[in-house]
View 1 (tube, one colour):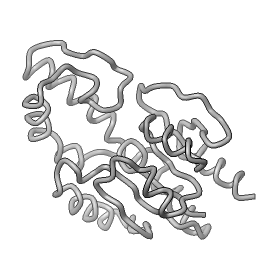
View 2 (cartoon, rainbow, N blue to C red; view 1 turned 90 degrees about the vertical axis):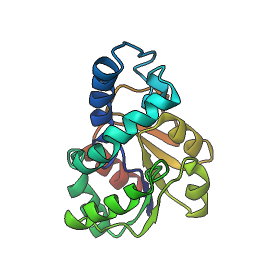
View 3 (spheres, rainbow, N blue to C red; view 1 turned 30 degrees about the vertical axis):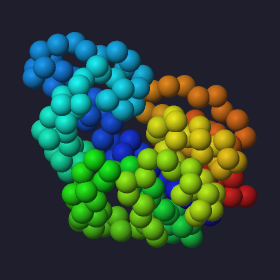
View 4 (cartoon, helix red, strand yellow; view 1 turned 45 degrees about the vertical axis):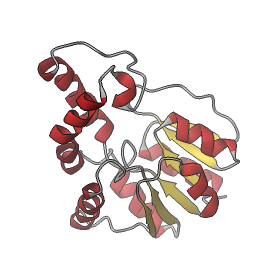
Length: 193
């Protein structure tokens, strides 16, 4: 099978890191409480920050978070098992859109961690549905509910990896809500039969 895999919040636990540092930035730097919706994944949608605030936050923390975020529990092992099982792993991520340096940082980190297991890399992809269709992805793994909804709407099996506070989605034939990499591995083994 061809498996599409997002990075942030799926392979790397960056979403929790962002949640920590956005809270600190809002309280300590901006000296306010401007949170409007904690269920939103993107910090730009959780706070009433100006574009200048968002830009300043990214300058202060974006590279730090990218370099330091831990892998999601089990992600490294399960990704290597999926590769050994003969699946094609295709990275499809928005990473690199706000800062092109993140692409090289990501490749360096994957190399250092012996995680050069992806068959293809797509960076700076916001609308993932198109790439999933072009690549004939069998299963896409993402943590952003809008991506999961749009990809499953075109008949591609989609795993909504729900870890941090986020919107709820109703499961259907093409959309499965899972909470960890062990569940992901089990689900992929079940659907490949």
